[in-house]
Image 1 (cartoon, rainbow, N blue to C red):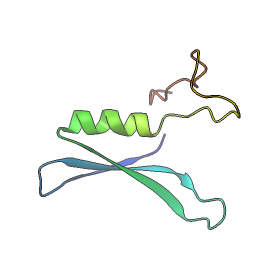
Image 2 (image 1 turned 180 degrees about the horizontal axis):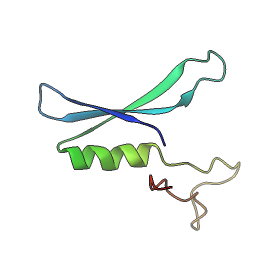
Image 3 (image 1 turned 120 degrees about the vertical axis):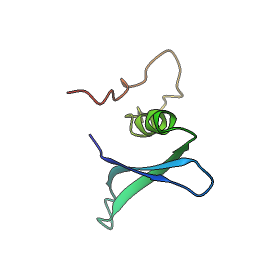
Image 4 (image 1 turned 45 degrees about the vertical axis):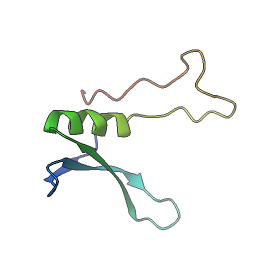
Length: 74
């Protein structure tokens, strides 16, 4: 599972940077930043940001064909 880095911002929100992988062309690490008013909210958003997404051509999100969510458990 990707490791999240947390930081409290000046406006009081928690910022979590989630490692989502490497860029295939440049090899640089890719991160996504999510924000929450509480640590729990930020962690939940980080888990959603890290969830696998079905990118099958022609899949427009219909009839429950999404990949299972990443629960963070082994």
